Length: 161
Image (cartoon, rainbow, N blue to C red):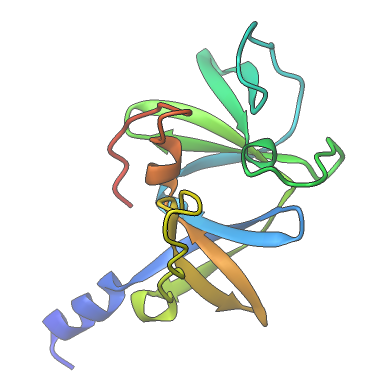
């Protein structure tokens, strides 16, 4: 196989971090993941929306923490031993997102990702890149840039995984 063909094949495969929100699996491109931490107490910000848990001091950086479970209206939001914070580098900003747990890292080719269904104007699905079958379950492939750039999160950045 010519070298340029091999480059094209590997360019179409990306690594994704799989995490849980309730019973659902989500995946984000791992290039935006800076680190994974256990959930710890945060400093609350007065008058912030409910899904903004507060901020933490991460080695000198003040990092806002968003609870995706609340943001996505999960039926149960429990802060237990498996609750995890994924620290993301979104452009020049560092943010954290609270999830129910991290499952694994997978590799997906672009052809493994199916387009998300068209829900018309029922609700905003701009953060959904597509769907993939992982270990016999459907996983939502999230476009973390779109999600973290949404008007209510307002992190506007240029993370290009």
